[in-house]
Image 1 (tube, rainbow, N blue to C red):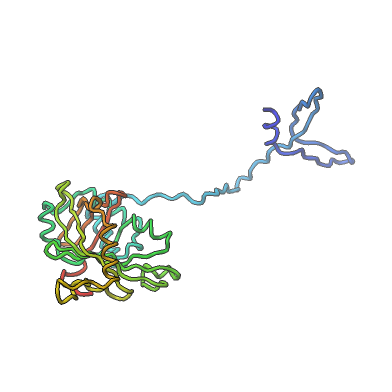
Image 2 (image 1 turned 180 degrees about the vertical axis):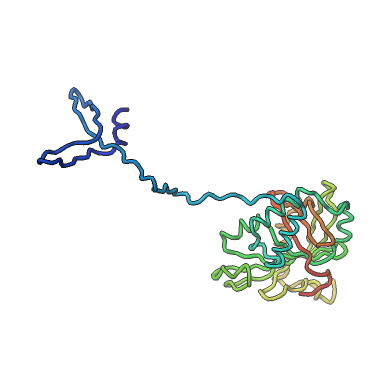
Amino acid sequence: HPSAAMASLTPVAVLPRPGGRVGLRGRCASVRSGSDTHTRFYAPKLARPPNAVRTRASGPATTAPRLPETIAEALATVEAHLFKCGCDLYKATPEVTAAVRTMVASKRVDGMTTNEVLDCADGVWEVFDMPHVRKISTPLQVGFVPVRYTIAGRKLRSDVRFTVPAGYANAGRSGKGLGGGWLSAAGGVKMSTKRSDAVQLSFTSFWVAKDGDKPRDPPRSKLSSPELRLSPADEFVDTIGKSVFLPELANFPLHFFDNEKGLCVFEFQALESFVACKRVADAGTKF
């Protein structure tokens, strides 16, 4: 429509000329309004000076880090990161996540079957990259450090320390939020019944602990007799944990395992997220 096109033009420029005359500089266009036709002037667009800089509201362009071309390069990136930052999933950089993806693509498990991997997987493992937890917890201002798995003879224990705001800048790192505690579970790990390259976790007991430098031992281990019952609070937590644990989500393809370096990567398929862990101690280590 003509009027829409006209609306985008710059209004008339009226400039004085020598001798008191008024001159109009610009271009003109005929505008029809009803039965009348009149002429309107529009100033020309000004040319941008040669040294002018065009700005962009979107800010500078960013690019994803490239994937390391070799597994050696990927391992060097990961080991340098772990030496500097330790196993803190919130400190994983895009370069570390890219290195983990190169490790995944290699499908290197030391030439072992899943059962053979489990036979030599004993130890305390801590997560250093867990994208789905980082993505979900960061907006909620909740920190999970460490995320720890202890394997001994295919028995499995999980201990996760959580912290909450305010002071979230330190919450996931040094444990100095408003509050927090430990979420723990115990069970076992075996080769998945659904696919030969995956492990299957099962948890049969759950408990919590107040915040501190280390988690509680399992409440049942403190009972002097199997006939004795847990406290009402521990019984409640154990019941809730068993009700929310979903075995169908507990199958994790194993994409990378290096027994010498103590590194492994498995996949949480529900969210297509790769979880990278480092063995930090022997299975019998007490924290």
